[in-house]
Length: 310
Image (cartoon, rainbow, N blue to C red; front, side, top):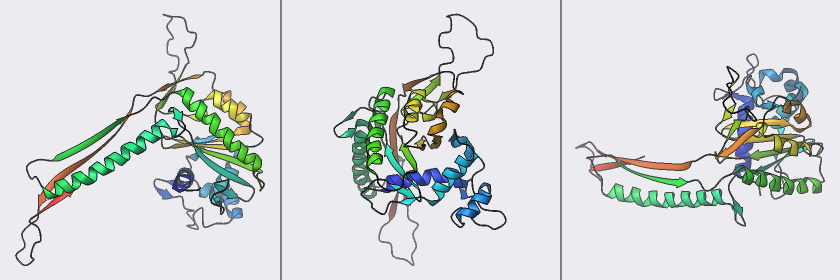
């Protein structure tokens, strides 16, 4: 059933395309924005309504593809049949959202997600008790604080690949059963765990001890990027007849991939990437400063002090 996660994921993609510096891109002449115009107006003057930097999110898209995906994002709406496939529809296709994980998965789902939910529940309960205690017993001599940590469970690229393929294939089954218009099929995939890093293996097969002069440095990412994963890109390409675009969201960044043109931009990556887990943890904290309430003789005080919590 559709919920806030799907809507937030799509809104994030729109934000990268139609916003700049925190505000919607505005036609400097008409003052209109991307939701204020017709399809024809957008087709004629699309560059006046999009972030000029958004092309760095596009992989394998020609000019007509960029217009097409931008207009789809502009017009797509939630499926009125909330419990049915897909999540979003537009006049000649669909967008389906799903999440993947690089942590171990069991019958209850991803271990990371389960542990994080338990951690957040514990923190919320502890905070409520501490706020009550600190409010009842203010301390003016020092700042009080409390923190909580959760170490990440085991993560690996193997887990991510398995999650990706299994989840993809389940949704492909839904695509096959879908009877409405599916001329353009889009999968919107979300990976939000910040648990993998990528390093371009430019020195694979290099002889030990051999110098490499001023050859370029290997490309490094402190988060997983689908656009650099040659193995999964080739897997996605095998479904090019059913899924025409893949939107991938991770680490505050989106990537929009035209599946049909994957072989062309794969040629820009002569090397494979080493994908390894990152040692990480979730940290949250709260602090308290007790501040006396100034005395006002004209206004009776119910309390002589106030406890400010952040």
